[in-house]
Length: 632
Ligand SMILES: Nc1ncnc2c1ncn2[C@@H]1O[C@H](COP(=O)(O)OP(=O)(O)OP(=O)(O)O)[C@@H](O)[C@H]1O
Image (cartoon, rainbow, N blue to C red; front, side):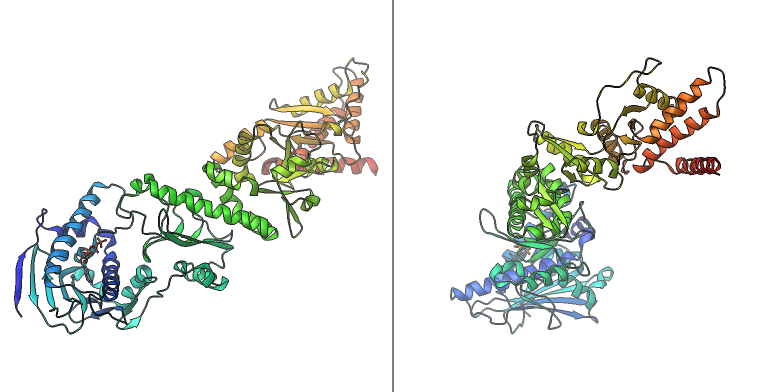
């Protein structure tokens, strides 16, 4: 063989290779992505040059990877444009090296890592190989093949060689500690991971491994519903089917293609890193797009493919990049457009998916003002008003009705108040919910966790509205506020009942209100939680990541028109008649019943601790025992 040149690669660092190894230590496997990407580029260049008539074309463009166990080599071959010896000197010795050195300089400075480790290029092969040979023959007419080799020191050699076909073979003599890369299964996995959607056949020992045609590069007209579902299942196996998807495709002001899927609720949603896959020109880059899309979009899945996302900058630099930010805004806008279309055109489907999409929409609205403006009219709440389907804003799905805030407000009789009634727990708040419903009021059903933040956010955004939970106070119409007769002791009946309950419960934190409630079905006592006081309790629980329990400060509303309360007052009056100092058995019974009344009210809102429930049970048994002994 004729030696063309032996020499030293011009470098500033004495030996770049140990640095390459150390700097990107954990990501050795990306060498394959870099080399295959170079091959794809070379194949594209040959195609373009052939069209221009500068060289002979190649119909069956492909990349082939071969393993030689005996020699411990891995060879990546392509039939791309190849290189002349001058081009090898220029592109491998100078360009490739300087880009690797530049990359490493950048890498050393960045504390938080570089997003895709893109840009290391050809020299990444030295992360796994102790010796690299590059055999290449240019597609230009009458070109002679050359072989470049380098043993990891800055010394290289370039000599003539025999190579019948146009293209490039990169032969990696693997280091002992990198022998995992002569395992076919390992290589296959890497091709699937990084090269699956590359536009050229990538083979292992002549067997095609990659899928090639990425659906997101096709137009929506070319794809059927099944194609999208198939892609989802391929990318996220065993995760069921997606709810719906959006196809992204834009060329200006940046190039971006992709398909994003909404997963079904119940599947785990990753709000930290997300599972959207980032591609650059059909080459897989990363499983995390958290620097590219706003946080609230992270529970989505799918692919974003863009050549305009700078991949060899640090993650923090990416977050502040203007182009990247506008990409995030573009994606958010596309999603809100899709959701709006679904609500308008397939309202019942929108009702069906609402529970799955609502956390994402609400968090998005709270975190991003622009997004809030886009989705404000499509935020819906389940409502007790079943006739709301008459309104085009409102939706029914199965036996559930949903409404928007706007149409709820339109239905309010008293337009001066703009009060929105809501309920977070249909069982725990059943008593008060039924009372409001009985008055013909419309109540919205909300979720405890997210709406604890979302409701105050809505109120801050629309200053004239205020939300009021059904158990925060009672409708005035439910109370009989006619003046009371003053008793012989100079006090009203209500005052006496309040004093009695206060003495028996003996807890400063409990405020006792006594009212005469209308209606035959009303209960003897109930717990009310004034809105602002309860909200403070809810937020406290949220901070401690607990479910909110019954706040210590609460209101006990005693219904003085209930026969039990009336009886209790009479029992107490009878014991007073015995005169001071005289012990009556009525005293202890009055106390027992008063405390029992309070416990019943607490029990119905889930506010009794296990220990108190045990006491309640014991007292209940005793009271029933007394009742039986009276009857027998
Ligand atoms: N298989 C190949 N066939 C033809 N030319 C190649 C091949 N591999 C590398 N080259 C040439 O060597 C140059 C340097 O490659 P290298 O991978 O280091 O950087 P790059 O591809 O230009 O950019 P990047 O750093 O993003 O990978 C390429 O631009 C190309 O001209």
